[in-house]
Length: 142
Image (cartoon, rainbow, N blue to C red; front, side, top):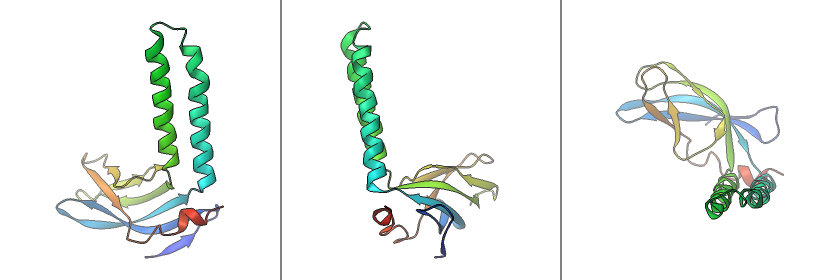
């Protein structure tokens, strides 16, 4: 597993695999950014605070309760997503295991499994990180 620190603090490259059922996995290098507990909690608090501030303004629009409940639930869901974002995918490139077309790993929250749609054959591969590749990374970021 080749890892190298990149220029931005908390950002690192690691080897991974692109998998698709029935096809041999293909190697890929991905760049990840570890997110600190402060970043996650601060972002979740800001997201929910915006929802709480917007809710009273929507309470005047009939029907009153569904708008308030909807914005508070949406704020809670978005805050929970931010709180769980330990790593962010910055980018990477690899090839589709089925058709061999170039796959671009787009930026976003790292999910398990992380989907990688192929624009050429329209199959959805998954990004698989080796066991232990993320151990201790998010907690080490200040």
